[in-house]
Structures are given as structure tokens and as C-alpha cells.
Image 1 (tube, rainbow, N blue to C red):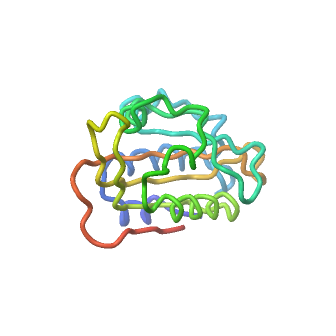
Image 2 (image 1 turned 120 degrees about the vertical axis):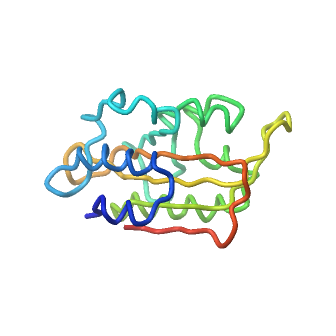
Length: 170
């Protein structure tokens, strides 16, 4: 099981450290956190960055479905993405195929997933281009066995990310 210390030694954005402490406080028997017991209003300043994936009917190669996405996701994508799947959202993002393969691995193998990467796509009206994202994702389980939800937090940046993309499973 991932520890807060591992996360603190890996992530850069303070918000991800706070988010992980919140999620880890909902782990059952040092295993998967239970999303259904989380009260996001305990971290209201982070809710705009949070997303929730509905994995209740997830199969190994399925698309990932957004059940909830905070307002920073709406701003980044230029629309409300709740109810959308990942492939329709990230068609312009060159590393999206790789990133969502890694999200699926996190779900299938019950792993926490961290990424810091170059992420470039423009809003339909051309007003904004994102250059980087830093994110942390946790698969969740209501019964401690089957993954039925996933929760993540993303910091969107307009400054270019220098260096190689970073993808880590814990």
C-alpha cells in the first residue's frame, strides 16, 4: 500500500499532497480507499481539481467514464465533461493513449498512479492551450476487493513541462 511519505517524496504540487492525505484516510485495512465514504466538502479548495471515474461496470479495456469533474476540468476542456469518456476528451493530446493505458493498469492492478507530463491540447475556440498536468489517481473499492470508483486530482498548467513525462504506479 502506498504511504503518504512516498507521495510527499514524489509529487510537486502541495494540493496533491493534501488530496492524498484525504484519500488515504479512507483506506480500509491498509488497502483501497472507499470513495462512497468520502465527503469532498472536507477538502473544498481541492474539489475544482478533483475527478471521479465510474468503474462499476468497468472491463479491462473499457473507456474510463467521468462521473464527476470539478470546475478546473470544465475550464481546461471548455465544457462540462461529466458523462464523457476519456477517448473523446483527449483526442488532441499526444500522450493520451499512453496515459489511459496506465490509468487502466492502475484500476486493473489496484495501484495508485502519478503522472507529471507534457499535455497539449486547445479548447475548441482556440483560446487556451494547456502545456502540462500533474495528477494523482486512486482506484477505490466499497467492499475492499472490487474496484468500483476511481478518484483523482489534476493540476493543469499553462507553462511547458520540461523533460521527460513521468509516470509512476505505486
